[in-house]
Length: 376
Image (cartoon, rainbow, N blue to C red; front, side, top):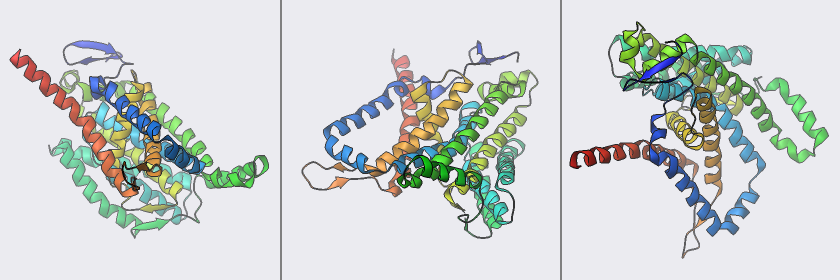
């Protein structure tokens, strides 16, 4: 554990290196660019209609997408920790995200400071991760099933905390409230009143950016400590690190706690940004997190922990921008006057198909290579 970790096959790499298995597959280097090329081709073919639609789109839409991408950035880092660092299929985040939102909203309504509610939301999410880890390690229950059990139980806990299915925060003081007068006056003095509509999203981007930079560097630092290196080795080669006397069960529990704590923190921030907390707000969030990880790894091909945490946050921003673009653009159908347009209800299905494609293709390629070796 002197700054290195051993990979299967008795090879060693520097502690700055990260093995991102799906990103090593050839398809992940080229297929996503093929998708981008297809989108560009469609834009070229229907450029008049597309450019007109994009021109009509408000700047507030794009700023809102960036703000949401940064707000969900902690979710992307949390998913990266479980799926890449620990190699653990964790669905708990679909429950810890609304748990963080519920805790923060309930505390704010009860008179707590919005800032003090954030660490409590982090602890609440971390406890959900600990519950998953304990069920998996102490009861020897499959990790995926353990996370589903906690996710299911978290729904009732969230309802108990909130006392209802939805808590509005429109009139409550949030982490953004102290800065709103300054930003409003700044935009009135420097620009015309037309920009007043976007000042809220710009304020949110500034606050989210400051918080996500702090979270990113905190995670980077931790993963380079002795404890962080042990956790990384646990996901990479548990047999080896166990032989060195490391408690791999403890490392899994710690990783799940940090991951879900970050997700709970993100839930608290997004509840304050959106102005409400809802018990169903985390449904399908794991798909968005996986999409952010895959997009970030594909576009940036990170070679280190610092690069990977940056890539997944950037991947979440690109993901949210892509959703905003998909909901705006309408593609004319050849031979008809009708157009094809994604509805808001179609986004989760499209994202699920993208992630399925990303996870399935490497497996298919691996099976083909195995058949070639047998026949060769």
